[in-house]
Amino acid sequence: MEMENQTMVTEFILLGLSNDPHLQIFLFLVFLVIYVITLLGNVMIILVISSDPQLHTPMYFFLFHLSFVDICYSSVTIPKMLQNFLAERKTISANGCFAQNFFFLLSGCTEGFMLSVMAYDRHAAICDPLHYVNIMNKRVCSQLVAGAWTMSILFALINTLFLLNVSFCGPNEVNHFSCELPLLLALSCTETFTNEVVLLMSVVIFGLSSFIPILVSYIHIISTILRIRSAEGRRKVFSTCSSHLTVVGLLYLTALCQYMKPRAASSVVLDELFSIQYSILTPMLNPIIYSLKNKEVKMALGKIYSSRVSDVH
Picture 1 (cartoon, rainbow, N blue to C red):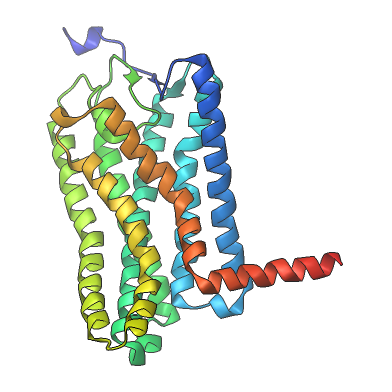
Picture 2: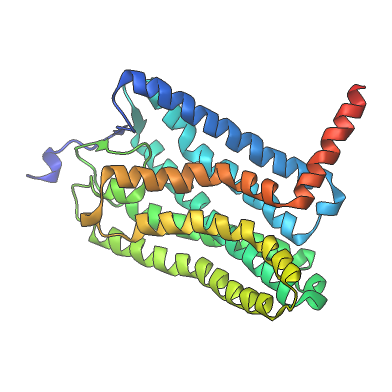
C-alpha cells in the first residue's frame, strides 16, 4: 500500500472515558468540579502568597510558580475533555492534537523540575540554615525557575518536532481523553522507532535530571533530621517536607510508569488512570496538600478571611 494513495489524517477522535451518554453527563460534572477546585485552589495559593509579605520567601516563591504550572497543566486537557463529554463527535484537529501534546509535555516536565527546585530549597533550609539566605537569594530563585521552564521547553520541543515527521493515515481514533505522545505514536502509519527512542531517552535524561536532585536532597535532609536529638525537633523539620514528598510521590510514580513502560504492557484503563492521576488529580491536590499541611498558609488565609469579614461589618 503506497503512501500516495493514503489520505492523511486531518483530525483525531478522542474516545475518552466512556461512550455511555448518561455516564458522560456524570463524568462531565465530576471533572468540571475537579477543574473548578483546581483553579480555585491554585489561584487562592497565588493570591495568598502575593498579598502576604511574610510569605515572600524562596519556599513560597516556588510554591507560587508551582500553582501557576498546575493551572496550565490541568488547562491543557480538561477544557477539551469537558467539551467532548457533551459533543456528539469527539474530535480534535491534527494541529490541535500536536499543540496539546506539546503543552502537555511542557507543563508536565515543568511540574517535575519545580518539585526538584523546591527539594533543593528545603535541602538548603534544613542542611545549611546559616547560609540559607545567601544560597537562595532572589537572583538564584529566579534562575532556578527560568531553568525549569527552559529545560521543559527543550523536552517538549524535541519530542514534538520528531512527532511532526510522523505520518498519520488512519485509524484516527485515540483511545484516550487527550493527545498523549505514546498513544499518538501507536496510530502512525510510518516507522516510529526513532520517536520511541527519542521519547525514552528524553524521559530518562530529563526525568533523572529532575528526580536525582530530589533524591540527593532528601538523603541529606533525612540524615540531618536523624541527627536532631529531640523527637519534637525531628517532627517539626520533617513536617516542612511532608507536603513536598507527598506531591513528588503522586507525580513521579504514575508519570514514570506511563512513559517508561513497554507498549506491550499498555492497557487502556491503566493508561487513563495514570493520566488522570498525574495530569488532573495532582494539580488539584497540590494546593489542598500545601494549604492543609502548612501553618503559614493557613494563617495567611485566616488573615485574609478576617479582614474580609471586618470589611463587611
